[in-house]
Image (tube, rainbow, N blue to C red):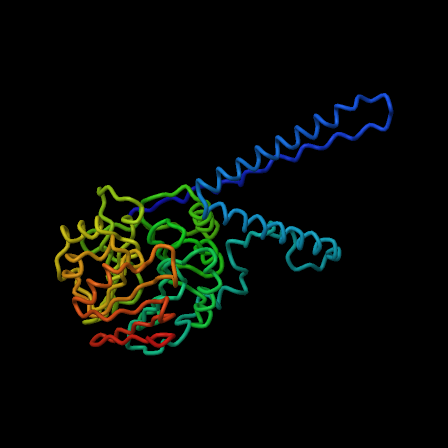
Length: 391
């Protein structure tokens, strides 16, 4: 399988130092108009700077907000680091780590200390609720996607990480499940609502394999994800739908097939989404990320109904009418549909047309905005759905 070499970390642009205000003269013979020119210059520079900020915001609102959040976090960490350095006693010759340099403020070291390695390699990390079942959890991350899977043998997989503000919710869930290592992580496509927290996930958890599509994005979120991959020494694997293309998960009882994207097809960003068909014995779930009608039509043209058939369908693009077409629903023929969607979102997801298609086929619907965390248990024969909130 081809590998995508992570981009070299780009150093953040340094803001030019603010021009120093000329010292006001104290002598009566100084010409009075000079301070006025200085003030006009500063005012003009401020207006230009504000205009540039507005341009950056309009070009990439989510990336701009994340840069501001990151700058604030780094400033606070730098101040804290400065205070700690002032209070830090002079090291003595008895120091156990001579020559070690503390990491720069705000940056976590790529490799854990040797004393932590045994804890990260212990498997399984937590006894699954049902060791004879595949468990799939739709974490409630609002208008975003983050899905956690645990195989019958305790192998773990995280598909997407939600927005940057969803990091705490995702970590709270993973920590509650006793997760210290993610055997597989999948970034389905580079939109912020799917990879917003990915760089922090990569730095916090021990990660085995990392899959992503062969498409790039010019956002700070995407660049930080690549930086984190490089820091951890992880070479991403490019996902393409090929005969028998599978996720190497490490549990032979579960098959995770890659059904999209296909190589050589002209996709837009949503349709680059990695689509996974995960099956355990006679039960299966289809995870479609933000795949829309175009990606669905390509799958229908290249895959058999048997390959697409699944008991559970995670609707594409948060239940948008641009996904989950009639033809695709007929091919997948699910009994259950699950939707990751935010309450009162600006897009009115899931769309009424999509819900109508599901109702016409008597498909049971579960959605995170109403049900909270959705747990799907596939035991090889039957499928059980549990929700955090009552349906």
